[in-house]
Amino acid sequence: AQTVTQSQPEMSVQEAETVTLSCTYDTSESNYYLFWYKQPPSRQMILVIRQEAYKQQNATENRFSVNFQKAAKSFSLKISDSQLGDTAMYFCAFMNPLGTYKYIFGTGTRLKVLA
Amino acid sequence: DTAVSQTPKYLVTQMENDKSIKCEQNLGHDTMYWYKQDSKKFLKIMFSYNNKELIINETVPNRFSPKSPDKAHLNLHINSLELGDSAVYFCASRGTSGEIYEQYFGPGTRLTVT
Image (tube, rainbow over the protein chains, first blue to last red):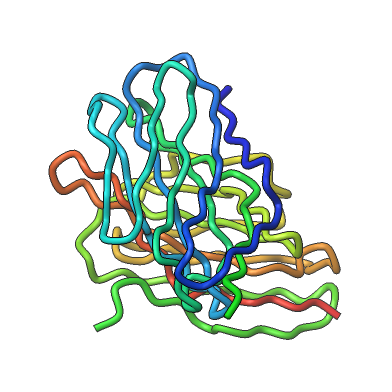
């Protein structure tokens, strides 16, 4: 069974600095999708970035980028130029597109951006 | 227009009552999900429907029953509510545009059982 592990329950970063959130996963599949979701205090789940496992190039979305290491089964999120609005829970998620399209979420990392 | 909507957003009820949460998506997606987020923020899948057919049914008490009258709607009915059912329940739908399997979440329903 696939699992997703986020080993950092809480992190903090100074405004304008860079922070990296870790995520590892376990799967025997070769084709899958990985996601980072943000949940601010409003509780709305917002997609931050996605990565297709068959693509070697790391995904980027403005200040957000990932370091995808397929062999190591690692999918970390880097936030550059951190802003106060980045304060949120961040969830890493795995999805296998074969079968039931089930998404498996990590336990989350609470990120606080300090002024 | 809201992509995925849920009603109600807040629900406070007493133990042993029966309640329903409704979810609607206007994205034209075929697949919808229900998740439960507990007090520790852990997000766990409960059910998934694809075009009105149940395709994921996790280990959930049978007091929880999903119903999908059409592919744009997925409702969650809970019988005989218990204190442990207090949580935030999220509905989501999944896109299939190209190869991007992005989930779109509703705003969540905070259920409090007293």
